[in-house]
Image 1 (cartoon, rainbow, N blue to C red):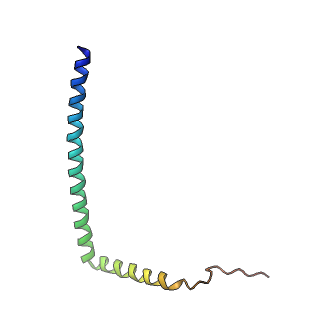
Image 2 (cartoon, rainbow, N blue to C red):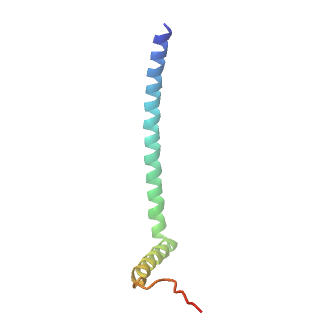
Image 3 (tube, helix red, strand yellow):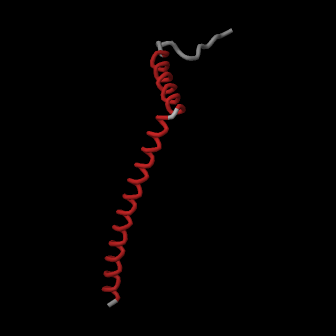
Length: 77
């Protein structure tokens, strides 16, 4: 009889685990949507536009700055 009780208990735990997984997935989805909305709102602000411009300028500079010369040049003497 103890064996049957443990079997039923594990079935309930499996159902509870599945419910928790579904709830967790819903929470993650809502958090992702909220983060996306915050990002869209930030990009519309002046600070967001400035940050985007700074990132593109930095990307252009890093793409053009490497002409094959070493960054640090050693001098003996």
